[in-house]
Structures are given as C-alpha cells and as structure tokens.
Length: 476
Image (tube, rainbow, N blue to C red):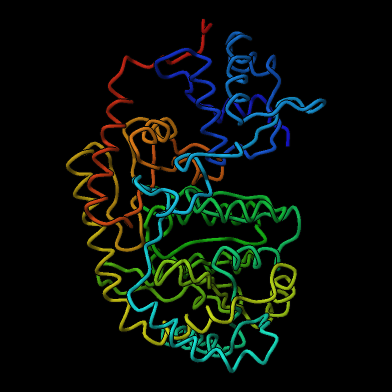
C-alpha cells in the first residue's frame, strides 16, 4: 500500500511539538504510528523529497528520521519499492500491539486491554465439562453451528430478555470479533459501505476493511449518539450494513436508550441496512439500572446480534456467537465455513455450564468491576483533575478527554514511565481524537491508583516543558 505524503502529514499531526532535534521528533512520531497500527506494516512511505515538501522541512530532517527508523527495524529499504514500514523482529512489550496482557507486560501498568481476569468458578466449570467430554470423543468433533447444548442456553437467555429465539438461530464462533468478520462477509460484497460509530473498537473496523468494505464513520457526540446525524447518514449513504455497539459502547461507555434503539432500527429497516449489533458488554451493568430491550427486538428480521463471554466470564475461552434472522442463517453458515469449522468442543461445554450459573456468578463480577471503576475515577480526580470523562453505568473503560491534543505523544512518554496506553486516535476510523484516551478499569484497585500516578507524572513531563512549536517552518 502506498501512503501519500498528504495522508502521512495528516497522521503526523503536530509532530514537531516537543524538545529535541527535529529528525528525532519525526522518527519518534512515525515509530508510534507504526507500532500503534495506524500505519500498517508493509506500507510504502513517501519518498524523502515528497515528505520534505509536504512537511516544509529540510531534506536532511526526513532522511535522518528514515535512517533512525531503519536502524530500529521499523523501516526497510527495498529496491524498486522505496521505504516500506515493518515491525522489528523483537519488540519490547511496551511497544508491541500483540503482547499478552498480564504476561508480556508483567511489571508494567497495562491500560491497553479492556478485559478482566476470569470469574471465580472457571476451574469448576472446566472440571464439569471434562466429565461431559467423553460422549463427544466418538464423533469427529466438528460442529459448524455449535454444540446444541450451548445454543439452547444462549437462545433461552434471549427468550428471557423478551426476544424469542430458537437454537437454530444461534451460531457459535471463536469470539465476538470472529462473529463480526463472518457476519460482514455474509451480507456484504467488496466495495459496499458499512456504517460504524466513531470512536469505536479498532479491531472490528480493521476486520470490516479487510473484507473490502468502505467504512462510513458517524461521530458520537459528547452526549451520546446523534440520532438525526445517524439518520441523515443512513439516508445519504445507504450502507449495506452497520456495525454498532449500543450496550456500554466501547470505548465511550454510552448505553443507548430503548427509544433511540427503536428509532435507529426503523432507519436501518427503511434503508434495507442489516445491523450487526455487538452485545459483548451487555452483562456488565454496574449500577443496577434496568437494561433496554435487545436492539433486535425492534427489527428481528433485520438485525444480527453478536455476543461473547470474553468480558463477562473470561476471554481465554474464546467463545462468541451470533443470533441470526432465519432468512440469513444459510448465508452466514456458508461464510463461516470459509473461516473455521467450529469452536473447540471443550470450551463450548465450559461456557454452557457457566451460562447455567450466570445468575450466581455475574453479580459478584459486576460488584468487583464497579469497585475498580470507582478506584480509577478516584485516582483520576486526585492526580489528573483536568481530565474530563462521563461516568459510565457499565462496561470496562473510561473515555477521557485531555486538555490538549497530545494523546499519541503521551503514549510514548508513558511507556518510559512503565505505563502502556493506546492513543485515542486508534479508536477513530478516520483519524483524529488526539485529545482522548481510553482507560480500562480492569487492573486491581491498587494498580489502578499507582498506574494513574505514573500516568500523571508522564503527562506533567509532556505538558510542563517549553511552549510547543506550532509550525514546521525553519526546521533544520
């Protein structure tokens, strides 16, 4: 992929704001963009001359920055291809997009992962599932749609929420992201438009784009979803599909009201847009509020619902699912067959047992997460009182607005203080959001407090220096 100089200039933003030689500031900003995934490995950067002209700096500045990136393994020179981005063969945990939280990041305050540890009771569920496993060992073990016992439990849960569902409408997948990818592949063709929110979960947006679809992002306002803007965008762009998170939206934490769900479902139905609605965070209501009906209640024939146990029970189980309207089941199963032949049998048995005990296990899970949320809020109020956020009634993260657009720069500074972050711009399908950070409240309360203290030190070191340079003129 060729990255035009104009596009790269926009991604770089105010890269020259900071102390030190200009070439090192440029190299550091480019390194962060590559490590954070906003410039994908294998992308061809503009030539030195093209970037020099776009940034208004000297050729020496760009050449020296590219040399720094080559020396650190983030840039490769290929004959006939120019300068191509790469990831070093060995990336320190604080720089890797693919580290294992809690393992590779041992000794660091990791705010990159909005997922808690396992609920108590997982080991017992595994033991019970192992006792049920022998009956399945005489079969090949492939269940493209999922084990009947698990599909029955999930269908019953939708019935309890007022959404009549048969086990045949449930398709088990290897997590919610896999479910999203399968659903998009089933109902779209290359070049179709898919509507999403902004900010939103970046991995899901990446999956949509890898399916060859064009993403149409609609901003979430400070007060939540802007329904008139959503309706206007749906009318003007006629998206083939929409991917939404309406239960404690990741990363903002907003919960869509029942009235807004009905209004939006009507807009999708009029445009013949199939909605893919991710309910992964549905179970994590933290303040005892009554949850709105499932989005699919308002258009059962036009909504694919995605669910998972990764946030409510444990991500290590890698079990998700889709609730699919009857006319779409065959298409979805056909799309799934090209991606996987079924989730692990043992994991499905474990999840079926956990779902039978959810009324016993989840209340304490919610209380524990609420304590962590309150600990993070308290620490931010003490150490970073200028940061603004809306207290979410559920979910796993705060969406914080910083006084200055320094999110990407703060990621690099915080790494040196032992704090791992993801820039707010990573959650934007179209770039921007440099004044925001997502802070999950999944660490232990003491770790959250210590991590925020270190984060405050990082922020202070970034914002208490000399006044930032606002132009790139006269940079040697």
